[in-house]
Structure formats: C-alpha cells, structure tokens
Length: 146
Length: 146
DNA sequence: TATTGTTATACTCTATAACTATA
DNA sequence: TATAGTTATAGAGTATAACAATA
Image 1: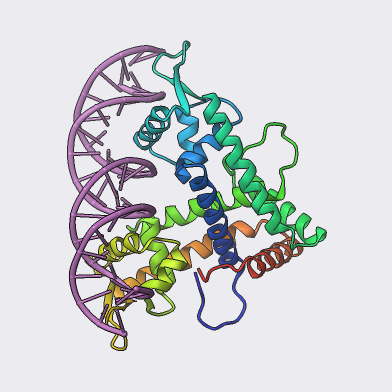
Image 2: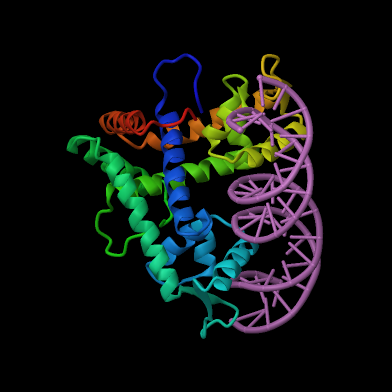
C-alpha cells in the first residue's frame, strides 16, 4: 500500500495504513494479556453479553467450523462457555466467564487508551470530523457491530 | 468493541470499527485473487520494489522465522523470488515475479477502489476532514510504510 | 428438507529456540 | 562475537466437505 512517487497518498491508502496501525496496537495489547488477536477480538465482542454462533460468525466474518475451533480454544482456557439454547436445541449461546469478562474489558480498555492517546494529536475539530466521518461510513456500509 | 447504550462511540472505538471494515475488504479482495490476506499484504508492500528480510519483517511486524515461511510459500507459488545480496552474502532481497506484480497491483487497485466507493457517501468536506485526520495520525504515530 | 453446529482434513500463519553461514 | 536468515517444532487460525441432531 505504499506508493512510489513520494507525493500525497490517497484517502483509501490512508485508511489501509490506519488499519495496519490499529491492528498492530490490538495485536500488541492482546499479547500483553496472553491472548491471540482473534481470541481478544472474540472476548471484546462478547463483553456486551452472550451471543449465538450465527451472529458471532457473521460479526467475526468466520466460517462456522472456524468459529467452532475458536470457541473450543477459549472454552478450554476457561474464558467462555457454551450454553444450549432451550428454545432451539440445535443452537447454543456463547457467554464469557468472569475471567473472560475481565480480560475482554482489560484489552478493550487498553486498546482504546492507546488509540485515544494517538488521537490526542488531533485538534478537537479534526477529532470530531474523524468521528463523524466514521459514523457516516459505518452507517452506510452496514458495518457489523464490532 | 461494541457499546451497549446506542449513544455515540468514542474516537478510539471508531478507529477500531473502521479498521475491521478495512480488514474485511482487504480479506475479501485477497480471496478473490486466490491469495491469503498475508500474502496479499506482502505483494502490496513489494509492489514498490524489492526489499530485504529485515525491513520486510519490521514492516509486517513479523518474527524472522514467520517471514521465512511466508516468503517460502509465495516463492513456491511463483509470486516472489529471493535474491542473494552480493555485498553481504548472509542477506537477501525479495522481489516480485511478473505474476506477483500483477496480483499485487490488482489487489491494491481493487481494495482502494472499494474503499473509495465507501468514502463516496461522505460529502467533500467530510472526506477531506477524514483524510486530513488520518494523515495527521499517521504522521504522528511513526506509521510504517505499508 | 432445511438449519445449527461439529468433525475430519489440509493448509496457512505465527512464535520460540536452536542452528548455519557470513561479517 | 554479532548478525541475517533457516530449520525444527508446536500451536492457533482458517476453509471445504461430510456429518449429526434438531426443526
């Protein structure tokens, strides 16, 4: 996503670079807490409450078998637990354990803290412009809730 | 990174969501071209010319052994090639083959195209504000060249 | 029959530690 | 000794296809 001329990069390229930066922060923080980025992402999403596999797969953009494996691993580590849905006994809901909640909250807090410190270089007009633009983008692109 | 109340999200959360969206676009486009996201990322970075393993590892934020494996796989697929550095014969430089250049360019072009179309929902003031904020962020955070 | 989730299988991605070759 | 890169190993992440259980 670099470009050769040395002149200004496009808006799209800027978004890609920004995304790399965020991914790096998220990855580093996850590691600090002994989690892989995927596991941390899962915990952050489940922080707001239990979810079914279907929603979770759509949110994480994962095939169902990939999600099965991810849940297996966090469950084995005592961070989440499957619970059978009583109305539809094929389905299940995934909820966090106390330790899972603690870690999910900690990662979220630390990631947001680091990113807020990054955005501190923006003046308040720039920051609101960024937030407004992102809101607009997410609203229009049917962004998933994560 | 969801939030429960339905009210406005913070700037940091906006960045995280934006990053997820970009990652999804990048991943989907990579797949279209038969590449993994990591391979596509590598090809995009090498599009501007050959690089040494050291720089590449720092840019991709990978341990050297992880990079060895990634290069092995793209080399096996005929997309890149190692070339021994004549001045320091321990080192090598990685360059793209014609097919690698073609794919790297194609992914870059398609990703940027999709992102530009997404940002088309913004009016021009919002778009410039977003770009200005992102530029400012990248400038201050010592962003890597990818 | 259709849907939810798991199992089987095969790769890819990643890190740590030990190693080789060159400087 | 120090550095650039590889090899060995182990585990995590992912997808496809086939399957089981429930609807």
